[in-house]
Image (cartoon, rainbow, N blue to C red; front, side, top):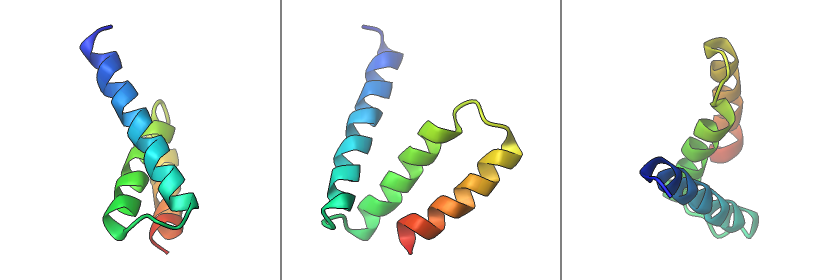
Length: 65
């Protein structure tokens, strides 16, 4: 396994862990922010800049609201 796949897999694993904490309402503010950041990275992969900005604003309201 190369280094890029390892880093990406680590991020996906962390995303899953944070998502589970969020669903169980055990995520603190820092973890919600980290989840937001990782999710934006994941979902924005390959999107146009305009689509990214629109989605980013929506996710911020959900994750931090």
